[in-house]
Amino acid sequence: MKPLDQEQQAARDWFESLRDRITSAFEEIEREAGSDAAFEYIPWERTDEDGSPGGGGMRGQMKGKVFEKVGVNVSSVGGAFNPEFAKQIPGAEEDPSFFATGISLVAHMANPHVPAVHMNTRFLCTTKRWFGGGADLNPAIPYEEDTEAFHARLRAACAAHDPTYYEKFKKWADDYFFLPHRGVDRGVGGIFYDRLFAEGDLFEPHFAFTRDVGEAFLDIFPQIVRRRMDSEWSEEDMDTLLDFRSRYVEFNLLYDRGTIFGLKTGGNVDAILMSLPPLARWT
Image 1: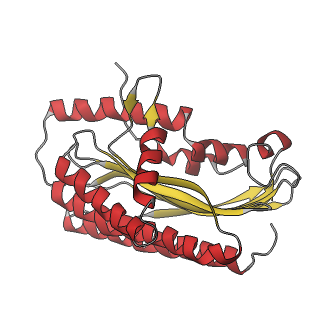
Image 2: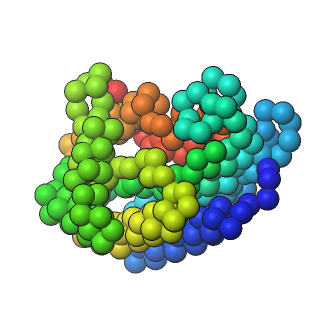
């Protein structure tokens, strides 16, 4: 993989620092619950299609009392897209060279009343450069209070940069996180954005927005976890959770762009599929 330029290095450093603060916050919640669970980190390396080194990443995973399974991965990869996939990527059809760095997080919770969550932010470079990502809440048993708090925090992050961002990116999330074969939403939404082109003078403002999305997630999700993690639950609640998780699996395997991108670019399979829950049920 080619040496990183200043923008690429800055994005990579930010994603790694956000990873460290998120994992620390999640481990703190486990301590409050009387658990000594901690993240295990497994580095991985990627080989490009021509056999040259293609970067890699760090897969972090924890199984605890509150977090039944949570993965927080950071990767920085580069090389060349295969010709067919390059046609789908802005700026790659004529020159298939690429660089991508980002953080990806999925948490599945032990208590059915605590929502699962997904967050990722990323920076991609071809002959064009752009940021993408977002965060969305996925409760098996929704609480309006949690939904409103999650959206309010993301709305504030968006409003600090552009008054049109929240409604536009909320709709994008609503449309994206939808299972057309079942006609249901994956969760209660959030925001999703892609191809926020960050070339020239647009790099810093779009990078700043992406940082604020990460900060918003780190602020609000631990609050929601603490609000629900001691809730009593029944076998019926667990049945609801397992059924909900099956829909989550279907979305990630059939429609998720991050899953498709990782598999198409030779990423670490275990890191890519860390989004799958430990238990689910199809009836």
